[in-house]
Length: 190
Figure 1: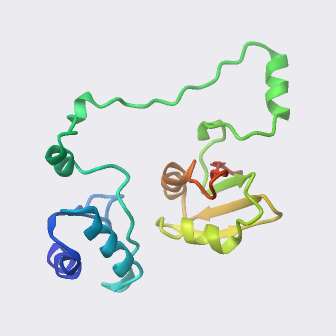
Figure 2: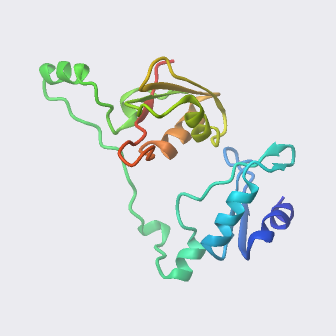
């Protein structure tokens, strides 16, 4: 697999490293570390959707800078010293505050307010956001099934199972749809 990926992507620039793991949950994914961002951009634009070993490639930038590039740039922080983020759950002081929270329409930033399911819920979508746009965003995640928009501003995104939906929620929650609007995701009811 690494040799085939090297042959395919080396046309776009110098490759420093290819990481392809076979662990459960990571099978079918690979990280290709290019020497420059320009090379990575060229590869992303040219190879996205390319038919490779019987499947269409879904190419995107990594969420974090690789350790190898960070060491080269002098911004490397060892994993043990990196700050871990833990979700903070709101405390409820009385029954009246609970009733007020139930009637409030804003989506909480913490997706844990609803038990995890295989369906994601998006609300407050801008008027120009349509089904095709959302499908393009979510199609890059494994297990994606469909997008349903029952009315303007609302969407349900269905995945094969909850772990795939969770990965998409973590990756796209807060994604900028327009200059003013961000994607607000939470778990839907199954």
